[in-house]
Image (cartoon, rainbow, N blue to C red; front, side, top):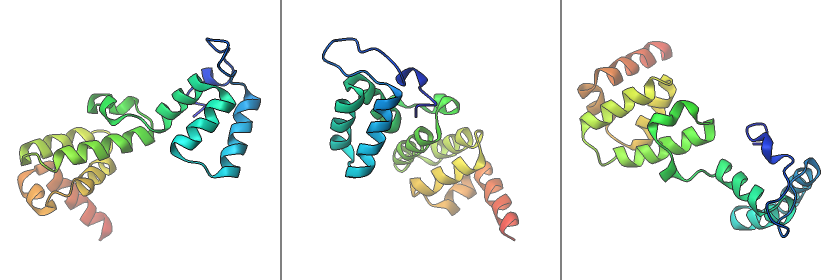
Length: 150
């Protein structure tokens, strides 16, 4: 996360009550989280006490993006974790969509890599045979997969 957001490594706080994130405080945070095996709100509380509330919030947003803030059009700019989150959100939406919409979404996601289209297809729970018969892209994808698996 710090490679993606290097500005969080060393940044003066905006107010006097917030902590000052430094390489040492990030190292201390890693140690504390490993020692306590904290998750969720507890991990955020420890992070806020160690690297500061603002840095902890930015780290949480990076590690657990709000699905409502993600959009297929930004797929290429997302990190892998955010891409998988977006696929899960999109799969939920596609589960109740018509076949045309499913085909369009799979083609759009497939343009970033066939493996993303396969993940989306599996996560959505739609009938693969029905989608393949309605969508040339999926039919071709399944044919390639079948040939690959031999």
